Length: 359
Image 1 (cartoon, helix red, strand yellow):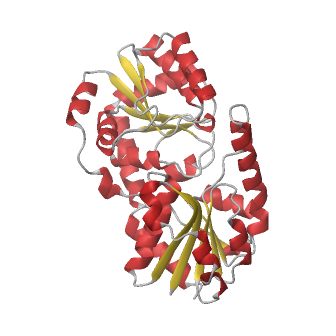
Image 2: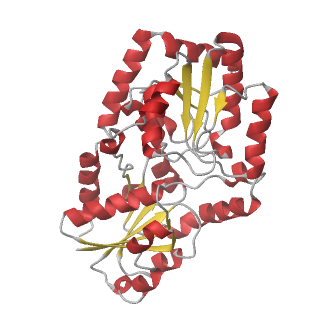
Image 3: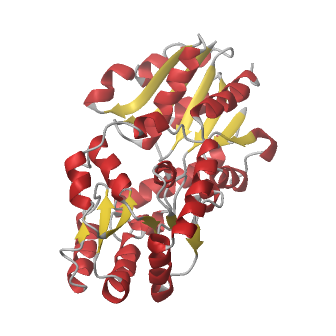
């Protein structure tokens, strides 16, 4: 059996790329042939990319092969998907609603709008998978036959989370302060500005001996300026840290941030999955999260959630999560239970059942 995967870009460290690679490794471990094709790639991913032309020249004509097409943004490579004679599997990673991006990057917002408008044109497939139930429901809403949809979760590499961590950084963060942690890109749909507003109330009225760690790369000069303005407005320059502002942080540093965290918080308005929620569960960090988009589906009850931004109430919730040992223990126990649902072996079994069902 031969499996071909097409995606927009192969980029080291990117979540979609990570899923493409894990599917490739899993399929190959079964003794199947596996190939990856991308419109673009970075230098580290160049050896992995067979190139779209290689797919166009032959494999796309075989009805015996399987094509897995990853939809995460608009890309002209969808024409290969439409023309292919392979048995077709679409994997939808979700596309950020353009209204979040338009004030900061109209061009990217337009690309996202086109990607969302493209979805109904791709519904002629053998199987359509979301990497969360939220994404599956969006596929059905876009016109995909519900009986031909399913969920294939993100492969969560818990083994990698247990690797070496930066002990100097961990010691620096273990100074008695309450560490509130967010991990993810600094993008408008994640509403990092709401998180800064929340921390300002918590730090100013509840616990001044605290810090907010925003761990992840930034995205837009204009959005960066908005975040910096808020930090200055509240006088939080010494209490808010954005490590990895340009290039991200190392795996060793990321593990240290999780190990030192008191509470993981996200105010995000749009997620297709949100892997950091599971990473927080692995490190037994209680979660406070906005119950929006895919977040409730990924959490599965293993965290405290909110819908509206009531800053004083949320500041008190943070205090309880940071200090109530019984509550922390209950939530981290639920997190351990939930994390088991995303065991990579279980996800591999799910993938195999889907693909073998097409043969």
